[in-house]
Image (cartoon, rainbow, N blue to C red; front, side, top):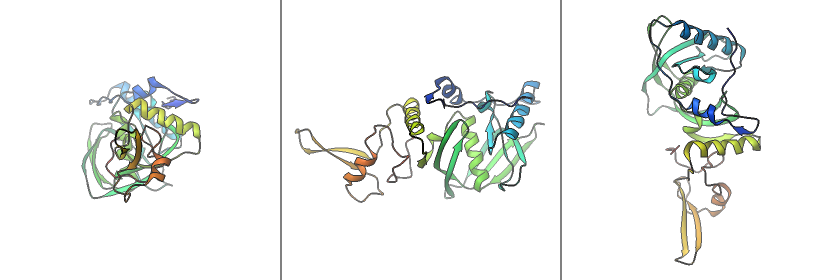
Length: 244
């Protein structure tokens, strides 16, 4: 089977809107017994996974609208075992068990975001013979499972609880903001506030209402809040509950 090309949200400095639209479409569940077409999808996932350096690939990332992903089976870096997850579901999460760490995405190249995820989760999926599998996941595998399920549910990682981001490429940062605007419109930070210094005199003061800041801080507001789109890629003064 051929190695498939990864569907990306941007390339050559431009957003690819048709790719974004496809990746934001909820995938369809697989029925059993699996068809020859689903078998082809699974083989393509395996061939692509074995050729690309990554921890997981969702079916829609290689052009198939099916609820399947391939991913590492174990947390150890040196272990190459993988698992095919069909119709995966997160049955339960431990609300007080959280982890924050860097994530990249094959479909959003050259960008790394620090994202908050649940650490301990209970998961369910089906194997290729239609047998139900259950497990408990934590650490990296838990993060991987949540990332790939978001893909299959038509979501991109920029819609999660982003704590900060990292990119050395100004073009990528610009593309990131373009993508945020495309997906969410003009998203204004909920903690950014304008105050009339003198009523009706058009003299405006800006402040950040984040609980992580103690009082007004014009310096940080000036640095981080000039853009009308959310600038959490660099701002560290926000609450954990995000709007995106």
